[in-house]
Length: 347
Ligand code: NAL
Image (cartoon, rainbow, N blue to C red; front, side, top):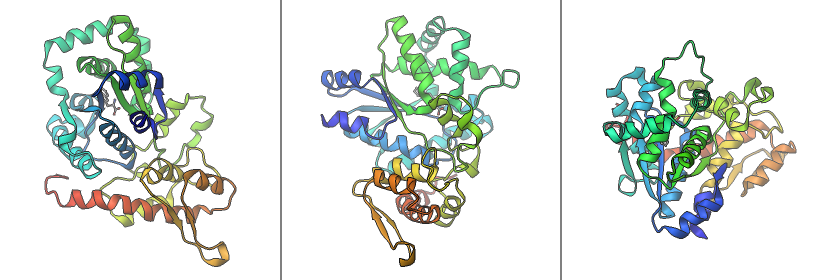
Protein backbone atom coordinates (compact mmCIF):
# COMPACT_ATOMS: atom_id res chain seq x y z
CA UNK A 1 0.00 0.00 0.00
CA UNK A 2 0.91 3.68 -0.13
CA UNK A 3 2.34 3.85 3.39
CA UNK A 4 4.66 0.93 2.72
CA UNK A 5 5.76 2.49 -0.55
CA UNK A 6 6.64 5.77 1.14
CA UNK A 7 8.46 4.01 3.97
CA UNK A 8 10.58 1.76 1.77
CA UNK A 9 11.50 4.03 -1.14
CA UNK A 10 15.12 5.20 -1.31
CA UNK A 11 16.26 2.75 1.37
CA UNK A 12 19.24 0.44 1.23
CA UNK A 13 17.61 -2.15 3.48
CA UNK A 14 14.49 -2.83 5.50
CA UNK A 15 14.70 -5.52 8.21
CA UNK A 16 12.17 -6.80 7.45
CA UNK A 17 9.64 -5.60 4.88
CA UNK A 18 7.20 -8.28 6.08
CA UNK A 19 7.39 -6.99 9.65
CA UNK A 20 6.94 -3.44 8.43
CA UNK A 21 3.84 -4.45 6.50
CA UNK A 22 2.42 -5.94 9.70
CA UNK A 23 3.23 -2.81 11.70
CA UNK A 24 1.27 -0.69 9.21
CA UNK A 25 -1.61 -3.18 9.19
CA UNK A 26 -1.87 -3.28 12.96
CA UNK A 27 -1.21 0.35 13.84
CA UNK A 28 -2.68 3.63 12.72
CA UNK A 29 0.29 5.53 14.17
CA UNK A 30 3.34 3.32 14.71
CA UNK A 31 6.27 4.82 16.60
CA UNK A 32 9.42 5.61 14.63
CA UNK A 33 12.72 6.90 15.80
CA UNK A 34 16.05 8.22 14.61
CA UNK A 35 18.94 9.57 16.64
CA UNK A 36 21.58 12.05 15.53
CA UNK A 37 24.68 13.48 17.15
CA UNK A 38 24.52 17.27 17.01
CA UNK A 39 27.81 18.80 15.91
CA UNK A 40 26.80 22.15 14.42
CA UNK A 41 27.38 20.94 10.87
CA UNK A 42 24.97 19.23 8.50
CA UNK A 43 26.24 17.72 5.26
CA UNK A 44 24.20 16.53 2.30
CA UNK A 45 24.53 12.89 3.39
CA UNK A 46 22.21 13.76 6.26
CA UNK A 47 19.57 14.98 3.83
CA UNK A 48 19.02 11.35 2.81
CA UNK A 49 17.71 10.37 6.24
CA UNK A 50 15.98 13.73 6.64
CA UNK A 51 13.93 13.05 3.50
CA UNK A 52 13.18 9.58 4.87
CA UNK A 53 11.87 11.12 8.09
CA UNK A 54 9.64 13.31 5.91
CA UNK A 55 8.37 10.19 4.06
CA UNK A 56 7.59 8.41 7.32
CA UNK A 57 5.77 11.38 8.81
CA UNK A 58 3.73 11.48 5.63
CA UNK A 59 3.05 7.74 6.03
CA UNK A 60 1.49 8.49 9.42
CA UNK A 61 4.39 7.41 11.61
CA UNK A 62 4.55 9.06 15.04
CA UNK A 63 8.15 10.17 14.69
CA UNK A 64 10.68 10.84 17.44
CA UNK A 65 14.04 12.45 16.82
CA UNK A 66 16.62 11.86 19.49
CA UNK A 67 19.05 14.68 20.06
CA UNK A 68 21.89 12.38 21.02
CA UNK A 69 23.83 14.84 23.13
CA UNK A 70 25.49 12.29 25.42
CA UNK A 71 26.37 10.24 22.35
CA UNK A 72 27.96 13.27 20.70
CA UNK A 73 29.86 13.90 23.92
CA UNK A 74 31.15 10.30 23.91
CA UNK A 75 32.30 10.78 20.31
CA UNK A 76 34.10 14.03 21.18
CA UNK A 77 31.90 16.24 18.99
CA UNK A 78 32.56 19.97 19.55
CA UNK A 79 35.47 19.19 21.79
CA UNK A 80 33.18 17.24 24.10
CA UNK A 81 31.56 20.48 25.28
CA UNK A 82 27.96 19.53 26.25
CA UNK A 83 26.81 23.13 26.30
CA UNK A 84 27.89 23.63 22.67
CA UNK A 85 26.43 20.25 21.70
CA UNK A 86 23.02 21.31 23.08
CA UNK A 87 23.16 24.51 21.01
CA UNK A 88 24.10 22.54 17.90
CA UNK A 89 20.95 20.43 18.29
CA UNK A 90 18.91 23.56 17.63
CA UNK A 91 20.68 24.10 14.31
CA UNK A 92 19.72 20.62 13.14
CA UNK A 93 16.06 21.42 13.87
CA UNK A 94 16.26 24.45 11.58
CA UNK A 95 17.70 22.38 8.73
CA UNK A 96 15.01 19.73 9.21
CA UNK A 97 12.33 22.39 9.10
CA UNK A 98 13.81 23.82 5.88
CA UNK A 99 13.51 20.47 4.12
CA UNK A 100 9.92 19.95 5.15
CA UNK A 101 9.98 18.43 8.64
CA UNK A 102 8.63 21.25 10.83
CA UNK A 103 8.87 20.99 14.62
CA UNK A 104 5.16 20.40 15.02
CA UNK A 105 5.22 17.22 12.96
CA UNK A 106 7.90 15.32 14.88
CA UNK A 107 8.74 15.03 18.56
CA UNK A 108 12.20 15.86 19.78
CA UNK A 109 13.65 13.74 22.56
CA UNK A 110 16.58 14.82 24.67
CA UNK A 111 19.13 12.07 25.37
CA UNK A 112 19.91 13.66 28.71
CA UNK A 113 16.27 13.34 29.79
CA UNK A 114 16.25 9.62 29.02
CA UNK A 115 19.50 9.06 30.88
CA UNK A 116 18.22 10.91 33.93
CA UNK A 117 15.63 8.17 34.58
CA UNK A 118 16.86 5.30 36.76
CA UNK A 119 14.76 2.85 34.71
CA UNK A 120 16.97 3.73 31.74
CA UNK A 121 20.06 2.40 33.49
CA UNK A 122 18.26 -0.75 34.65
CA UNK A 123 17.29 -1.39 31.05
CA UNK A 124 20.86 -0.71 29.90
CA UNK A 125 22.31 -3.20 32.37
CA UNK A 126 19.73 -5.87 31.50
CA UNK A 127 20.64 -5.36 27.82
CA UNK A 128 24.36 -5.49 28.61
CA UNK A 129 23.86 -8.88 30.33
CA UNK A 130 22.72 -10.34 27.02
CA UNK A 131 25.78 -9.54 24.89
CA UNK A 132 29.46 -10.31 24.82
CA UNK A 133 32.11 -7.64 24.94
CA UNK A 134 33.29 -8.80 21.49
CA UNK A 135 29.87 -8.13 19.98
CA UNK A 136 29.71 -4.65 21.46
CA UNK A 137 33.14 -3.87 20.04
CA UNK A 138 31.99 -4.94 16.58
CA UNK A 139 29.06 -2.53 16.82
CA UNK A 140 31.54 0.30 17.38
CA UNK A 141 32.39 0.47 13.67
CA UNK A 142 29.11 2.39 13.38
CA UNK A 143 31.06 5.51 14.13
CA UNK A 144 32.73 5.17 10.77
CA UNK A 145 36.15 4.20 11.97
CA UNK A 146 37.50 1.05 13.47
CA UNK A 147 38.41 1.47 17.05
CA UNK A 148 41.96 1.16 18.26
CA UNK A 149 41.55 -0.26 21.75
CA UNK A 150 44.63 1.38 23.18
CA UNK A 151 43.62 4.83 21.95
CA UNK A 152 39.97 4.70 22.86
CA UNK A 153 38.49 5.96 26.10
CA UNK A 154 36.09 3.57 27.80
CA UNK A 155 32.93 5.68 27.31
CA UNK A 156 32.84 4.59 23.67
CA UNK A 157 32.13 1.02 24.74
CA UNK A 158 28.99 2.17 26.56
CA UNK A 159 27.65 3.92 23.45
CA UNK A 160 26.16 0.95 21.55
CA UNK A 161 24.24 -0.16 24.62
CA UNK A 162 22.93 3.35 25.14
CA UNK A 163 21.63 3.30 21.59
CA UNK A 164 19.97 -0.07 22.21
CA UNK A 165 18.47 1.23 25.46
CA UNK A 166 17.21 4.45 23.84
CA UNK A 167 15.25 2.32 21.40
CA UNK A 168 13.76 0.05 24.09
CA UNK A 169 13.02 2.95 26.39
CA UNK A 170 10.72 4.58 23.85
CA UNK A 171 9.06 1.27 22.96
CA UNK A 172 9.60 1.72 19.23
CA UNK A 173 8.09 -0.03 16.25
CA UNK A 174 10.55 1.33 13.70
CA UNK A 175 14.21 2.37 14.04
CA UNK A 176 15.62 4.49 11.22
CA UNK A 177 19.22 5.31 10.40
CA UNK A 178 21.88 5.28 7.73
CA UNK A 179 23.36 1.95 6.73
CA UNK A 180 26.20 2.78 9.13
CA UNK A 181 23.73 2.10 11.97
CA UNK A 182 23.11 -1.47 10.85
CA UNK A 183 25.20 -3.20 13.51
CA UNK A 184 23.59 -1.18 16.32
CA UNK A 185 20.12 -2.03 15.02
CA UNK A 186 20.89 -5.73 14.61
CA UNK A 187 22.26 -5.75 18.15
CA UNK A 188 19.01 -4.17 19.32
CA UNK A 189 16.90 -6.79 17.54
CA UNK A 190 18.93 -9.67 19.01
CA UNK A 191 18.73 -8.29 22.55
CA UNK A 192 15.00 -7.62 22.14
CA UNK A 193 14.46 -11.27 21.33
CA UNK A 194 16.45 -12.39 24.37
CA UNK A 195 14.65 -10.04 26.75
CA UNK A 196 11.20 -10.54 25.24
CA UNK A 197 10.94 -6.87 24.28
CA UNK A 198 9.44 -5.39 21.13
CA UNK A 199 11.76 -6.04 18.19
CA UNK A 200 11.89 -2.88 16.09
CA UNK A 201 11.82 -2.95 12.31
CA UNK A 202 15.04 -1.36 11.02
CA UNK A 203 14.92 0.99 8.03
CA UNK A 204 18.33 1.88 6.64
CA UNK A 205 18.98 4.73 4.25
CA UNK A 206 21.83 4.83 1.74
CA UNK A 207 25.11 6.45 2.67
CA UNK A 208 26.64 9.00 0.31
CA UNK A 209 30.29 8.25 -0.33
CA UNK A 210 32.76 10.98 0.60
CA UNK A 211 33.96 13.24 -2.21
CA UNK A 212 37.34 11.55 -2.07
CA UNK A 213 35.76 8.24 -3.13
CA UNK A 214 36.36 4.84 -1.56
CA UNK A 215 40.16 5.05 -1.77
CA UNK A 216 41.76 1.63 -1.43
CA UNK A 217 38.87 0.24 0.59
CA UNK A 218 37.15 -1.63 -2.25
CA UNK A 219 39.63 -4.49 -1.95
CA UNK A 220 39.66 -4.48 1.85
CA UNK A 221 37.18 -7.32 2.30
CA UNK A 222 34.82 -5.16 4.37
CA UNK A 223 31.10 -5.95 4.44
CA UNK A 224 28.95 -3.51 2.46
CA UNK A 225 27.73 -1.66 5.58
CA UNK A 226 31.29 -1.38 6.91
CA UNK A 227 32.61 -0.12 3.56
CA UNK A 228 29.84 2.48 3.41
CA UNK A 229 30.55 3.59 6.99
CA UNK A 230 34.26 3.97 6.36
CA UNK A 231 34.04 5.77 3.02
CA UNK A 232 31.10 8.03 3.90
CA UNK A 233 31.02 11.80 3.89
CA UNK A 234 32.18 12.90 7.27
CA UNK A 235 31.89 16.11 9.21
CA UNK A 236 35.25 15.45 10.79
CA UNK A 237 36.86 15.40 7.34
CA UNK A 238 35.41 18.58 5.76
CA UNK A 239 37.08 18.01 2.38
CA UNK A 240 34.97 14.85 1.96
CA UNK A 241 31.64 16.56 2.58
CA UNK A 242 29.32 19.17 1.11
CA UNK A 243 27.71 21.13 3.93
CA UNK A 244 24.25 22.61 3.61
CA UNK A 245 25.49 26.04 4.68
CA UNK A 246 28.23 26.31 2.04
CA UNK A 247 27.70 28.83 -0.72
CA UNK A 248 27.04 27.87 -4.33
CA UNK A 249 30.63 28.51 -5.46
CA UNK A 250 32.08 26.32 -2.71
CA UNK A 251 29.63 23.52 -3.53
CA UNK A 252 30.54 23.70 -7.21
CA UNK A 253 34.28 23.74 -6.48
CA UNK A 254 33.98 20.67 -4.25
CA UNK A 255 31.99 18.73 -6.83
CA UNK A 256 34.41 19.65 -9.61
CA UNK A 257 37.24 18.14 -7.53
CA UNK A 258 35.30 15.03 -6.48
CA UNK A 259 36.12 11.40 -7.25
CA UNK A 260 34.17 10.60 -10.43
CA UNK A 261 36.13 8.33 -12.77
CA UNK A 262 34.74 7.86 -16.29
CA UNK A 263 32.22 4.97 -16.54
CA UNK A 264 32.59 4.01 -12.86
CA UNK A 265 29.21 4.00 -11.13
CA UNK A 266 30.06 2.20 -7.90
CA UNK A 267 30.76 4.37 -4.82
CA UNK A 268 30.79 7.40 -7.11
CA UNK A 269 29.66 10.32 -4.91
CA UNK A 270 28.56 12.49 -7.84
CA UNK A 271 26.24 9.79 -9.15
CA UNK A 272 25.06 9.04 -5.62
CA UNK A 273 24.04 12.67 -5.11
CA UNK A 274 21.87 12.23 -8.20
CA UNK A 275 20.50 8.85 -7.17
CA UNK A 276 19.77 9.44 -3.49
CA UNK A 277 18.98 13.16 -3.42
CA UNK A 278 18.23 14.87 -6.72
CA UNK A 279 16.19 12.16 -8.46
CA UNK A 280 14.23 11.66 -5.23
CA UNK A 281 12.63 15.06 -5.68
CA UNK A 282 9.27 14.87 -7.43
CA UNK A 283 9.50 15.74 -11.12
CA UNK A 284 13.28 16.22 -11.08
CA UNK A 285 15.19 16.15 -14.37
CA UNK A 286 18.92 16.56 -14.80
CA UNK A 287 19.84 18.92 -17.61
CA UNK A 288 23.32 18.29 -18.96
CA UNK A 289 24.35 21.19 -21.13
CA UNK A 290 26.93 20.43 -23.79
CA UNK A 291 28.06 22.13 -26.98
CA UNK A 292 26.67 20.56 -30.16
CA UNK A 293 30.05 19.06 -31.04
CA UNK A 294 30.01 17.01 -27.79
CA UNK A 295 26.53 15.66 -28.40
CA UNK A 296 24.42 18.66 -27.41
CA UNK A 297 22.30 19.20 -24.32
CA UNK A 298 20.55 16.17 -22.84
CA UNK A 299 17.72 16.01 -20.34
CA UNK A 300 17.62 12.92 -18.15
CA UNK A 301 14.33 12.08 -16.45
CA UNK A 302 15.24 8.88 -14.73
CA UNK A 303 18.26 7.95 -12.62
CA UNK A 304 18.66 4.51 -14.19
CA UNK A 305 19.04 6.19 -17.59
CA UNK A 306 21.74 8.49 -16.23
CA UNK A 307 23.63 5.57 -14.73
CA UNK A 308 23.45 3.59 -17.95
CA UNK A 309 24.67 6.51 -20.09
CA UNK A 310 27.51 7.16 -17.67
CA UNK A 311 28.57 3.50 -17.55
CA UNK A 312 28.63 3.44 -21.35
CA UNK A 313 30.95 6.44 -21.40
CA UNK A 314 28.34 8.63 -23.10
CA UNK A 315 28.53 11.31 -20.43
CA UNK A 316 31.85 12.92 -19.58
CA UNK A 317 32.61 13.33 -15.83
CA UNK A 318 33.06 17.08 -16.25
CA UNK A 319 29.61 17.49 -17.80
CA UNK A 320 28.05 15.34 -15.11
CA UNK A 321 29.75 17.38 -12.40
CA UNK A 322 28.62 20.74 -13.80
CA UNK A 323 25.02 19.61 -14.13
CA UNK A 324 25.03 18.02 -10.68
CA UNK A 325 26.52 21.10 -9.01
CA UNK A 326 23.89 23.34 -10.54
CA UNK A 327 20.99 21.03 -9.56
CA UNK A 328 22.31 20.48 -6.03
CA UNK A 329 22.70 24.22 -5.58
CA UNK A 330 19.05 24.67 -6.51
CA UNK A 331 18.05 22.07 -3.91
CA UNK A 332 20.23 23.70 -1.26
CA UNK A 333 19.09 27.27 -1.97
CA UNK A 334 16.04 26.89 0.18
CA UNK A 335 18.03 25.50 3.11
CA UNK A 336 20.65 28.23 2.77
CA UNK A 337 17.98 30.91 2.77
CA UNK A 338 16.40 29.46 5.89
CA UNK A 339 19.72 29.22 7.74
CA UNK A 340 20.82 32.73 6.86
CA UNK A 341 17.49 34.25 7.87
CA UNK A 342 17.71 32.67 11.32
CA UNK A 343 20.12 34.64 13.47
CA UNK A 344 20.58 31.82 15.98
CA UNK A 345 21.11 29.13 13.39
CA UNK A 346 24.84 29.05 13.09
CA UNK A 347 25.95 30.51 16.39
C1 NAL B 1 21.40 7.06 16.75
C2 NAL B 1 22.44 7.74 17.35
C3 NAL B 1 22.51 7.82 18.72
C4 NAL B 1 21.53 7.25 19.49
C5 NAL B 1 20.47 6.57 18.91
C6 NAL B 1 19.46 5.98 19.67
C7 NAL B 1 18.44 5.33 19.08
C8 NAL B 1 18.37 5.22 17.71
C9 NAL B 1 19.36 5.80 16.94
C10 NAL B 1 20.42 6.47 17.52
C11 NAL B 1 23.48 8.40 16.49
C12 NAL B 1 24.17 7.43 15.61
C13 NAL B 1 25.31 8.06 14.80
N1 NAL B 1 24.71 6.31 16.34
O1 NAL B 1 26.35 7.43 14.64
O2 NAL B 1 25.13 9.15 14.28
